[in-house]
Length: 601
Image 1 (cartoon, rainbow, N blue to C red):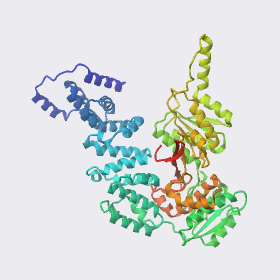
Image 2 (image 1 turned 90 degrees about the vertical axis):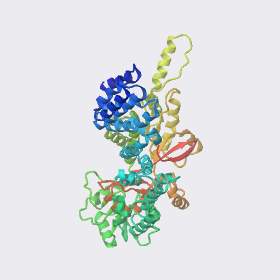
Image 3 (image 1 turned 120 degrees about the vertical axis):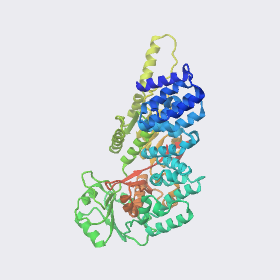
C-alpha cells in the first residue's frame, strides 16, 4: 500500500498542478547545494517545488539517495514513475537506480526484462560500467552464463574497468568455463583483441586439460600473443591452478564392463568409445576385465594387472558393491550414479547419463524465463516419472510452488489429457449449452485456458510427434503461443520431413554428440563409417565411453576447482562435491522443418 501511495503522490507531483518556487534563481542554486545533505524523503518532498525537467531531476536525486539509504519502496516508486520520462537524460540516468532497486527487492521478472531489453547506450555513460557489472553478476547467479559473458566483455571495453572491478577476471573466467565450445565460437565473430584472447584461453585450457606440459606451453604462447592481458600471476586462481596442478596421468588403466551376458552389447558400445578416445595416447595401455565376476576375483585381476586407474563398472549394483570396499585403493571413475547412502571418497568419481540432470536444467531455464504455471507431462514409465519428480523437486527448491504434474499411458489418454489440460473440452461444452438456448446458429471457436505458460513434455519420439501438433491445433487462435519443451527422450535422428514439420517450435535438451556439433564432426564421420547401423541408445553409450577416458586428465582439476567444466560429447561436465559428474546438455529446436542447435532458448 505504501508503494502505491508513493506512486500516486509522485504522479500527482509530476502531472498535477505545479507549484512554482517562491525564491529567486540565486536562492534555488543555494537550496540545491544544501539538498545534498538531505534525506531521500526530504529530497522527494523538495521536488514538489519544481516543475518539468528540474522536478524530475530532483526526483532522480531522491531515488539515488533512497538506494543509498536502503529505502527501497521509495526508490521503486520513483523509478516506476521516471522510467517513462519524456526527457532522455532522465531516462538514461534512472536506468542504474532501477536496476539497483530491482536487485535489492529481488524483482526477478523486472530484472530479467530490464537487463535483456536494455541497450547499454540507453544508460548514462557514467553508469554504464556499473550497470554491466551488476547485470553480469545477476546473470551469473541465474546460471545464464552466455549472457553474463557478453556483458562482461562489454564491460572490459569501458575505461578503467579492470581497476574498478578487481573481481572481474574471476567472474569472467567462471562464466567462460561454463560455456559450450559452440557458445565460445559464437562469441568470436567481430571480437576485439582482448575478447579474442579470453576466448582462446578458454578453448586452449580445454584442449590441453590433463596435459600439464602442453598446457603450459600453450599458455606461454598465448601470453606472447596477447601481451595486453594479465600475466599468469595476475590471472584468476582457477587459471593458475589449471596450469600448475598435476593431473591423473595413468600408464595402465583397467576397464570393468559386463563383457558377457545380456548387457554385452551395451558394454561393447562403451568399450568402442574408450578405445576411440585412447587412439591418440600411445603411452597408456588398457586392460578390459569382465565385471560379471565375483568382486574378489575382479579385485585380484586389477591387482595383477598393476593398473593405476580404473574405469567402471557400468551396472548399478556392481558400482555400489565396489564403492563399499574399504581397501579399494585405485582412483576410479564409476560409470553409474552413487547410492545416496554411500559416503563419498576422495578418489572415487561417478559418471552417469542421468536423466535427472536434464530435468534440473529445464527447471532452471523455466525459472530464468519467469514461468509461473508450467505443466509437466510425462509418459507413465519409470524413467519419465523420475524425470518429472526431479523437475518438481528442483522447481520447488528454486522457490516456486509445486507444478502441475500429468501422466499418460497411451494415445487415447494423451488426447484426453490435452483437452483436459487446455480446457478446450469445457469450452466446447459451454458453446453447446449456449447453442441449445438460442434459436439462431452460434458461430464460435473453443477457447483454451490462459494460465499455463509453458509445457515440459517427457516422452519418447513417437509420443512427442503425436503431442506437439495436437496441442497446436487445440490452442485457440486468440490464445498466446504456448512454448513446448522436451527432453532428449523426444529426439530421434531418423525423422522424416513430415515429422520435422509437425515438431516445428519444439525446444529440447540433447547431448552434443547426437546433435552432430561442429567440434565432434571428424569423430562423427569416422563413427558413421564403422557403426552406421548402431541404434541411438548405443550411440549415447559410445559417447559416454569416449568422455570417460578423456575425463581422467581433468578430474583432479575439477575436484580442486569446482568452476572447471569439461566439454564432452555428453555435455558440459562438472564435478560436484559428492564426486558425481553433473551434465549440462546442449539446446536445440525444430524450426522451418530443420533441426538447429541454439545457444540460449
